[in-house]
Length: 259
Image 1 (cartoon, rainbow, N blue to C red):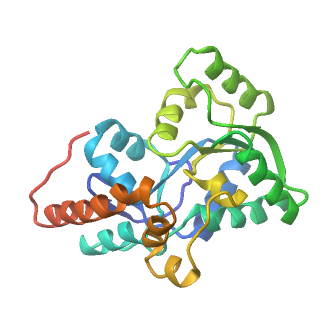
Image 2 (cartoon, helix red, strand yellow):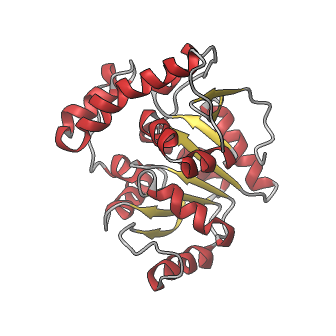
């Protein structure tokens, strides 16, 4: 493992989840840079766990990643139900600002890849407003043909490699960002890849968050559902109970997983 941290793990629905804190995550990223190594950092919420149950390739991608951290209270509670412990939930809407503050004085460079045209650039601008010396050396929206070998995909790979960022932040959403990384990581010249989902939408302010009393107490899913009901109703009203049932099945020893 590139991070070389003494981390315990929890196995939830066939996915190996690392019991890592935000501080440990930043430390591991710094060590990867200093030692000029490479690492994929993935994150899981309830939606990711359901995808991992249904799509073996996605589960395999997560299990080959160097770090898989918890990005949802549902997963944290699911791990506890299975006898494990996740120290904290790390969500990009908050953690991206912490990462920027950590990276600015160390001179780490970023490439932002994903979201609708203009959104990642807006996120970069907002981060620079607070951290003027932050080095965001490239920005590219996610509306391109990601087919391996396509002219648009090759152009994106060349753009990333031209600046050789320390940290590549992907914001395509699941599972597209994981598929793209799986197909292209061997050719990408970057130290760390982060699969950030809606990170640019949140940092740019394009997507609103619920109030702190909801987001800090396990109700961010409800806040998101209230903000975007037509897009997210199935993910939460169907996906959350389904995840719980699957965790119960695992606890009862009724399911087994194969790579």
